[in-house]
Amino acid sequence: MHITLTSKVRILPDEETKDLLIRTMHAYTSACNYVSVHVFATQTTNKKLLHDELYRDIRSHFALRSQMAESVIRTVVARYKTLTASHEPWKILRFSKPQYDLVWNRDYSLKGDIFSVNTLEGRRKMPFCRPGSSLDGKLGTARLVLKHGKFYLHVSVTHEVTDVTDSAVTNVVGIDRGIRFLATAYDSAGKTAFFSGASVKGKRAHFAALRKELQKVGTPSSRRRLKAIGQRENRWMRDLDHCISKALAEMYPEGTLFVLEDLKGIRKATERIRVSDRYVSVSWPYYDLEQKLIYKAAMHGQKVIKVDPAYTSQTCPHCGRRDSASRDKRRHLFRCTGCGYTSNDDRIAAMNLYSMGNEYLVQSGVSMPLSGGVQSTTPDVRRDPLGGALTSPDVTPADTEYSESVTNAGGVSRPLQGSHKPLLQGVSLSRGS
Ligand SMILES: [Zn+2]
Image (cartoon, rainbow, N blue to C red; front, side):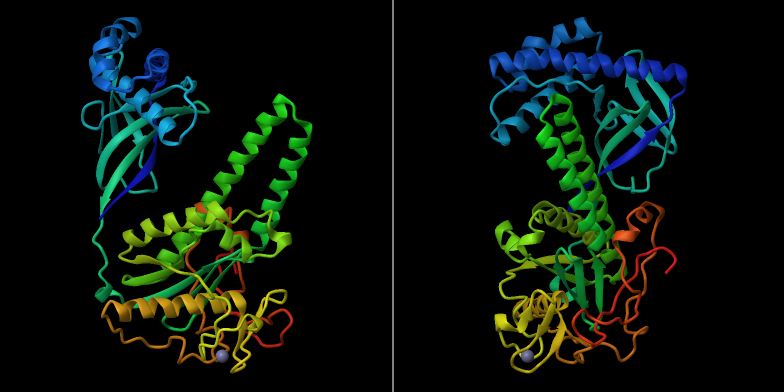
């Protein structure tokens, strides 16, 4: 299996090269706009036709080198194809920010600590900072961008990862995604990890209130601010998903099978939360988390499956009885009407997903010698509060900003609201605790 990620590389040109890069990017962007006018008017996205028609003009008007002229056509065509693919009405596309698209080994290379690039005045070399994400893989096309006076290269890097076969699975983790807990994970050792969503909910409510205010105003500047806030919120949620998926992939061993709910129907997901929580849209952050976990798991020799989430929150993981009356949504408590098994309701869902993962393995002909698991776990995992909890994953500097929102009592049992049973086992991602 191949996984393609985008690495962001900071480029460090000297003053003179900076000027040359900016001129090159402006020429490239101007040429893109020139081609865009043509594509819009003729409605053709055929690269060969565009090349025959425009190549000479692009080279002479914008002083671009031959390969850059080729790339310009590709860049513009790709944008128009995205437009058609998303079924948006045909409109003229403008390239307002300076950019420059590069083909690996032809227009650019990254070797040692030197970035080499084709410019209006030929090849130039300059240093770059190695990114946190890996560059060990097959480098693909890259885009040079200028942000707040700094140059970045967005490089696509394709990694080859081996598929995890079902027979190589040694650990199953059921993951329930929700609002109160962004993720609740239950594993083969019978341990539960909670990722609290409390402060996330607060922050999203804050964004929602801001949006509502600005919508009322309705001026061009308020619309601009509205858009900016939306983008800020999306970035923030993406970073949060990055932290959660990273923590999950890192705290479980190779050979782990993650079991997620298949949230194809967003409505289903919305129905699972209270009406007062509805302003917290649950659709795309879930999808985003899923995508991030899929590739991070693959990089760690783990895999992800999705199962039908029907009844995961109403079924008793201990005796198998399904009864909606077992779940007290208001108190976030599950108490089986059959056997009396009691636990936090998010944990119940994670346990059921865990069971479905085991079921999946049985069906694919794999029997796994698992210690722990649903049947052998006592209802409340308080026998060994510290030993029973997962160790805290390291919080990297990049994660620190969000640590307050991904926090829980580290391994310390604490009373469940409305119950006197210390049921919660947690994983701590918070600073210094
Ligand atoms: Zn039961």
